Amino acid sequence: MEDFVYFFTFQDPSIAWVVLGITLLGVGSAYVGTFSFLDKKALLGDAISHAVLPGICLGFMVAGEKNPVYIVSGAFLSGAVATFMSSWLKRNTKLSEDTIIATILSVFFGFGIVLLTALQKSGNPEIAGLNSFIFGNAIGISEADLMLYGGLSLVIILVLTILLKEFRLMVFDPEYGKAIGFPMKSISFLFNVLMILAVVIGIQAIGVVLMAALLITPGAAARFWTDRLNPLLILAALFSVLSGILGTYVSFVLPQMPTGPWVVVFLSLFALISFLISPKSGIIFRYFARRKYLRKTHRDHLMKALYKAKENGKSGLTIAEIYQLYPYQKAATNHSISGLSKNNFIATNQSLISLTESGISEGMRIVRLHRLWELYLNESMNIAPDHVHDSAEKLEHLITPELEALLEKRLNYPALDPHQETIPRENHDLR
Image (tube, rainbow, N blue to C red; front, top):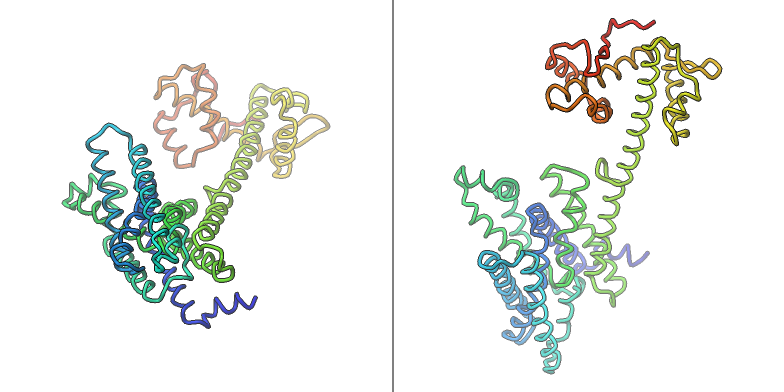
């Protein structure tokens, strides 16, 4: 608890710098990652994050020490070469994009490991801590490093904010952007530069192995919650920042723990929660929504069956007859009967179930929609009368009063469906 208070009250100025740096890094990475996720460039981000390792090692060799300017420059050049090779191979070979990216990732990362191993055996005392670039160590970053990485993150955030409209066109409709005069190739090139830069500035905090997760996971998790770009960017940034701070806190409390894996653990937790409980897209929400829909359709079908029985001159249907209509659905049928009775749509007299006044009106509406859809499918879609029933069964539950009026007008206010059954109207009295 003392560690928690000490960390989150920023009693040590270095902690405040680390939190500020990881916040800027999280926002910048989330912004770039969200656009790359929407533009289907997730694999490219993974390749770049692995491809910067040789540049890190070469930057260290040139400087002879862990100079952040040399390391960032080397990493950026290495990532740029990997991106250029990926684009060149895609244009000039028949290799698939995933094959190209996998090859570049493996070759560059393997070369980087060879250089890192050679540096470790060189005896240079400055090599200590270079391994942190593999899995990241935010707590071990110096104030000078944070100034550089934080400044570059701020540049990314500002560029993406100022050119939001241009990057939106790049992702959603580049052809339209080109048609109205935007230089889409230059915008795409600038975005690739920003993506490389986002990877480079995160490598010491998160590590080359897991930096792709910081790029892609926040946007993917936020996508479960919204379909709009601005809220998507904000949510992705929030998930990224929270994960970065929590992962850094674990590294602070347990110094032997690298930052990167814990950041990914918290990101994965946010993604899992989003996958499970987000409105409309969450698997739990969809489960209950589907369950509710199936119960509604079963009640509608039961109402329709009772209305058709009344059309045929019967006062209702017995429980046994209803069970025969829906074999193997006894529990669902009992639930529908209970719900309709509670809403005063049906009345039960011993074993006979019949429609009430309000039930007749509701049953008529469902039958009317079903027969309108059957006629529409037959006349407008040229589907044979004996093939329209199943489709109409699904469509009858998905209609608004406005669409119903439009459908009826389109069919010229018909009286009969394709089976020559009457399409009931409001004044259609079966009492």
